[in-house]
Length: 173
Length: 173
DNA sequence: CCTCGGTAGTTAAAATTTCAAGGAGAGCTC
DNA sequence: GAGCTCTCCTTGAAATTTTAACTACCGAGG
Image (tube, rainbow over all chains, first blue to last red; front, side, top):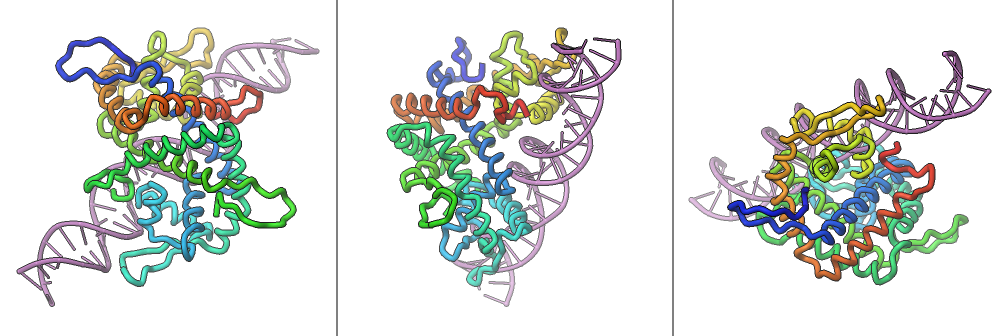
């Protein structure tokens, strides 16, 4: 049940159930994703004192010019809602890893800026995190599989953020 | 920064940073996963009144003999902690979609049982959910890509649940 | 200038998840 | 059968995320 094929003669068009193969793919994907997310959350909570999403925010800031980004820009890069980002930045600010700055051009705007301290945390914890990612994923896959995975995930990601107006994207909510 | 290659001569072994290609794969994976998770959570919250994880629990129960599973067994299948499951089942019980039953063999044990009402919710919402999964993933991938994805994700999933004792698995925490 | 609809970001409250602890029974061993 | 350890599951509190407003500002017309 749930993704299974069943017989029926009801009025609405028969759902395109997943085949057994498709079900196996989907289950593998869900299980791996859930386990991987949990694993990285745990690794970073232990070694860096923050969940994976928060770590990702610091990385985005570190990769940006002036180590700063507008809030909405950061939400877009991280694929999360602005509300979630507001809470996250508030917490990171308390830790002294991020600071807010007003945007001179737009008085509604805010920059999130990575502090020197935040950069230092990243320097200390990045090696361990990369190692965790390698062990969990890259070390286990052939170069061909890595390539395939990249292509597949890019397709899925693009499909979920259509350029059309009215798309229900997290950072626009 | 974060996954970047840098020069250094410090004492600890130089971290095995991700190459540019690996970084692209990783970013695609993270973005697609985040967006997909958000998308399905939203779809199910709207159409079934519950988050994706909760829906998955009902599906596991529906697929089980007697539509019932021991709590730890269910946690294992869903790759979540028993604590999280306890809270989730409590909520689903309030909705009338799941009921608890004592285990006769082991007085510590509990069964989570899918109610007729829960099964009905699944019947009503499964078609829409399968369609969402198709549109987001399967309809966009070639059969070869689907196959590759399944193999890749199975490898990753297996790597994250080693059979050794002392493994930090959610349902054993 | 004034209004109006849209944008940027925040916030309170509710829902969910994590963390740490605990209660009760099982399964030993002596 | 008493003591000990481990397992099964739950619980309360803290942390995070979602949801639904809400404030302040921008920008286009009039």
